[in-house]
Image (tube, rainbow, N blue to C red):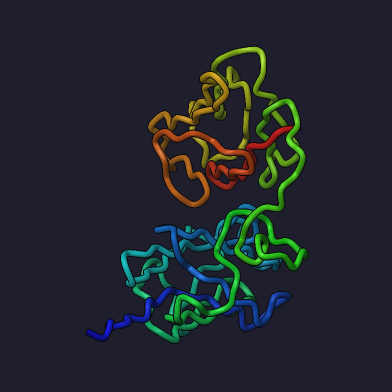
Length: 235
């Protein structure tokens, strides 16, 4: 009996205008994709008119919806300013100056996977699939603020079992971002792992685009709290 072959479709964003014009970003494997100017977004738009965190695309099977993240300039779909709308094949998304086209494409379509890892200029298979190039493992785990008002700050996760993050003066990593709760989350050291736990914060703890209550951090993970992006790494 002949086998019936079903072509799997995935979402794809093609950048129509801007520094990365022509680039295709495949929306697969995850259920939530963050887009904005910050390097830690799944879809990084390198344009000053784009907010650090500008819009979010949510996937439910083969249905995709886009949400504006309360930006000043707004997010437009097919010329209409939106808060949330379901995406149709061929829809045009505008976030600041950049324009992107949404399409459903074959799973094998060439492109970069939407990833919270920074883009790489290396033309190897790992970087083309949105991965982080492997680096030599260092000794001390840390949280480094890579975007936001506290950019450049770093907290070494050594010397104690629990580290508090938030706006409170008692925080181990004190942040000034008004979207962050006073006691936003904690990172706990458990054997050789670090676990991040949300403390029922108002705006949530986002790890690699997914809102979490509790998860184990992996080297290279990006954590978004409000408008602040933090990278978990070793130094």
